[in-house]
Amino acid sequence: MKSKQFFWLIFFLSNFFVTAQNEFLKIELQAKPKELRRGEEGTLLIKIEPRDDLKVLLYPEFIICFEESRNFIFNKYFFTANELNVETETFNQIACLKFSEELSFPFQIGENAFLGTQILSGEIIYTVMFKDSWSVKTSQKFSLPLTILKERKAKK
Image (cartoon, rainbow, N blue to C red; front, side, top):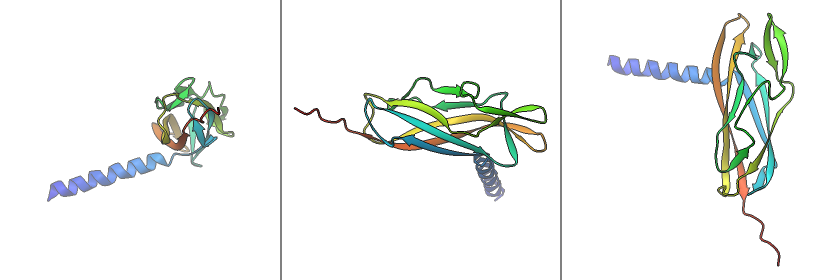
């Protein structure tokens, strides 16, 4: 009987921490255009909005990583805040990130990409500081479905 109670306690706590972790940042993704053909280029726009009661620290790291796949080709698969020219502000003499603009990432559809709806996915690795000055390093995954269409037939 005690093992069942222990199991439910662990299950509850793990779900609580996973849910709380995902609420640190609000991440909105948009692709332009939403439908692409093999070889075409598009742009991924990421809008990041931290919760009101915390700040995202510039250091030790802020990294956006994209999952490598044959469908979506980026010029590189990870980017730091410095590379992205994210604005900074100072809070309690600590450098924090200020996400006032959307982040833009050009990409191309691979020549051997699968057709249909494919998932562009990645992860943001960051450190948050709460108003009472304690901080935690965490990560948050993101994904966006995009449609890859057949190539246009050449007219004869």
